[in-house]
Image (cartoon, rainbow, N blue to C red; front, side, top):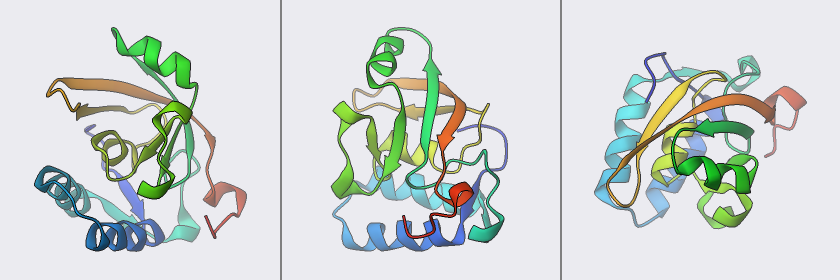
Length: 140
């Protein structure tokens, strides 16, 4: 993950913890979330910066190497709840390594995650095309 202090909204934190309690997970995902939550600044949902990736944010990203083609096919990425995940639509579960890395990142920030094949991958969050909080959509 990037060097900048990441932020997580208090509402997203409640939702993440609920997902972590109700899902059967690999230890690695639990460890990733534990580390991320310990290091993140938890902020009030009403004070969410518009360039922060939150649950249901739609982001555009660039990636170096062979992954670039995969991102171009998807167009945008959206961090979603596990039951909404669909890689073909660019909907990334918040319980997937990429979802953990994306949530709390800021536009312009580089993030890294370990792919299922064990290789480290990285991308840059170019922009936030949609963020629920910035649009007053508190229910998402």
